Image (cartoon, rainbow, N blue to C red):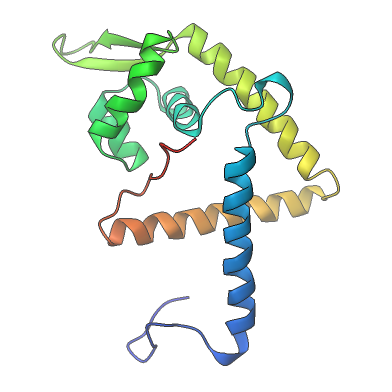
Length: 174
């Protein structure tokens, strides 16, 4: 909803207060349950990759090799956070550090074949969990939920950015 100078900081009206109360409550319950279960997937893979690792590996897979600064910028977090989160991924062989093809002095982070295999395993497990949780939903309901959740996350990210907060946090939580 666009804001106008006449709108209060509250931006609620008497008619939607109950709905907004329900929405904030359900978001809080979702956040707690997502943290408790980590929405990690099913089976043995269920809780085997923390959120920070998953998001970093997923970003490298989707966008290709990149430097720490570029990765941090694309995720909306600072470089020191990326450096700290990437270190164990390099140590375990999921991410490789290589020289930049045009500037041999610069380091580029790249998903390793082992990292891609592990990411695919986790994605499959999480996909199965999403299928189970929404098995009673129609394809249209799943699509609407994805659209609205994406819109909500985008609005939250934009708000955090406008306040000077890292948009990607708390991606380091697991």
